[in-house]
Amino acid sequence: MAKQVIAVVVVILLMAAAAYAAFFVAPTERSMGLIQRIFYLHVPSAWTAFTAFFICFIANLQYVFRRQARWDWLGVSSAEVGLAFTTVVLVTGPIWAHPVWGIWWTWDARLTSTFVLWLLYVSYLLLRTLIEEPDRRALLSALFGIFAFIDVPLVFGAIRWWRTQHPQPVILGAPGSGLDPTMRAVLFFCWIAMLSLMALLLRQRYQLEALRGEFDVVRRESEAG
Amino acid sequence: MKNLDSLFAAYLIGWGIFFIYFLTVARRTSALREDIERLKSSLNRGK
Image (cartoon, rainbow over all chains, first blue to last red; front, top):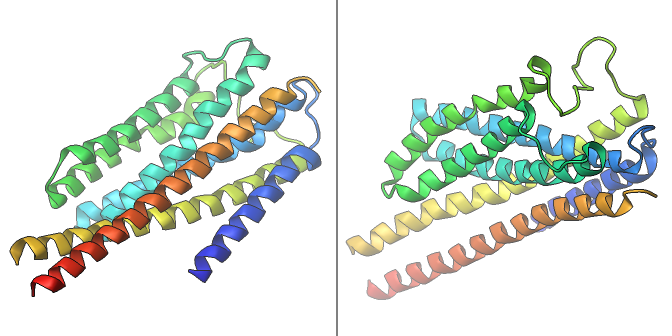
C-alpha cells in the first residue's frame, strides 16, 4: 500500500513538472502562439497510446502461443489504458485544430485512422463482454487485438505517406523538418511523465484483472460446494 | 494571451479523463475485493 502511494505521488509530481515545462519552459511557437502548447499533451498522449497498444499486441501474441491467463490480463489492461490515452488525443486534437485550422475535425488520413484505432479497441473491449467462457473469450479477443494493432503503423505513417490537413512530423520526419532543442527536450520530458502515468494505470488495471481471475476461482468453488 | 481558454480547456479535459479513469479502476478494484471477501466468508460458513 505504501509503495502504491509513493508511486502515485511520483507520477503526480512528474505530471506537474511536465505541465510546468509545457507552460513556462518551452518557447512560444511563432505562428500558432499559446495554443501550440497543447502539443505537449497531445503528442505524448499519442505516443503513450501506441506504447500501450504495442504491449497489448505482445500480450495477445503471447496468449495465442502460451495460453496463460496472465497474458490475457495484460492484454485487456493495456488495451483499456491505451484507449484512455487515445481518447485524450481525440479530445485535445480538435481543441487545438479549431483556432488554427478554423474547423474542429476533418476526415483526413491521420484523423480518420486515429478514430478507427479508437473504435477498434472499443470493439476489443466490447467483444470481451459478449463471451462468457474465459478461455474462448481470451483467445478470440487476443486474435482480434492482433488484428487491431495493424492500425497503429497506419496512424504513424498516415502523415508520412499521404497528404493530410494534420501537420507533417517534427520527429523522424523528412529532411529539413525538426523542432527547437528546448521544445524537443520538453516534449520528451512530457512523454516520460505520460509513460510513468501509463505504468501506474496499467499496474492498477492489471491488479483488477488478476482479482477477477481470483473471483472466478472462488465463485466456481462456491458453486461446486 | 489569445486562445488561453482553449489551452486550459484541453489540459483540464485531458487530465480529467486520466483522473476519472484512475478513480473508476480504483473503485472497481475495491468493489471486487469486497465481493471476494463476501464470497470467501460465505464459503467458510458453509463448511
